[in-house]
Length: 244
Image (cartoon, rainbow, N blue to C red; front, side, top):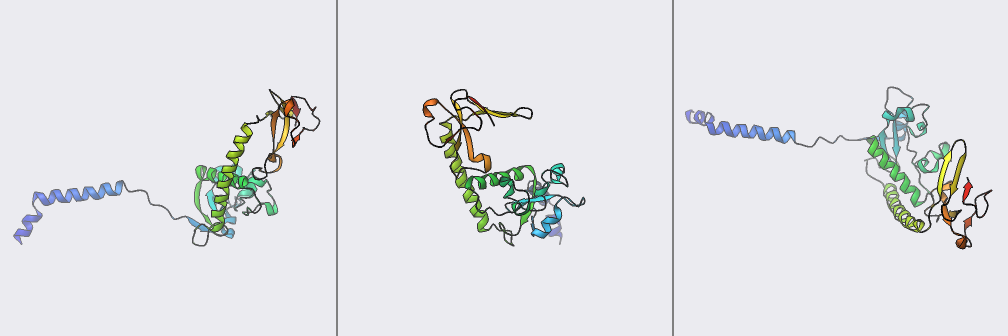
């Protein structure tokens, strides 16, 4: 008994105990913060967070990832210009511009690879700007929160879109883009410092939507016999400036 008591009271045991306690302290101090489990939402649950209930945060989904956009309440809340995105995953509308009815969907069917890339880029914007809070169970995540084939397919298509857009940029750099400006009083105009403006069709796999399917490029007179060049409406064939 006395031997055990002498051991417990010895300086060696005291130093060892202090070192052990310090090790525990520093281990806990430098441990990475715990990762909070993100919530899985059904479409019906996500719809509750559309900005109509002042007691709830405002959430939106894009490609199945759900973000808290409450700090942008003036935009995403009731009456805000982006309120149509709140409480749902309307991934398609980020590039289609159709904010009504069937346009507010997460389906990417029929979109070009560059359009899908644009949606993936929007997802990157939300991940950098707002807080991710969960996943939407459905097209892009299963009931366990795992990515589905649809998400992997979208990511692969976006990657192809990035490659095509880089290739197109190289091609477009060979033919200089027009200068452009717009004002509320005077409208828009395009002009060329060298050459004259022409509308050029982008390849279908590159084209975004609507007016973005074409670009304005500057061509010199000896290049104007190329096929596919379109003169701006009400613009003289050799005019350097055209109203748009």
